[in-house]
Length: 152
Image (cartoon, rainbow, N blue to C red):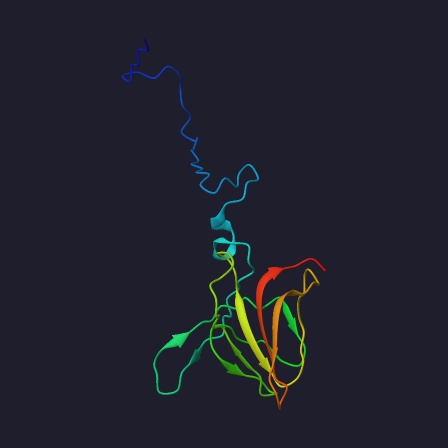
């Protein structure tokens, strides 16, 4: 049995003492890593493009995610994600995907270009899973790539 008496102090307490409260929510004090410390709660490399634009005749502003930041393209540019754009060479990029994602953090992009192009991840230097479909006359290349690396 413990008996506590709050009526008198057992020791003198200095008036210059102060307290500090530390709550280790993210388990980061001991070197741990929590999803709250990672961008977008995952390790898939999604970054926000902080440039905003206003649609003509509209008062809505939009900031777009840029998950293609670490991808290199030849013969086309990847400056946007989440909308259809036209590049300097007439290629289209859309994010519509004909099948559900392979896993929860998959990122898809569909690229249509008038000539062959390649796609690889800058950090890993390896090709990703690519589906190729060419059409007759203009030999447009359609590739659907998802952010899941394969071994070379």
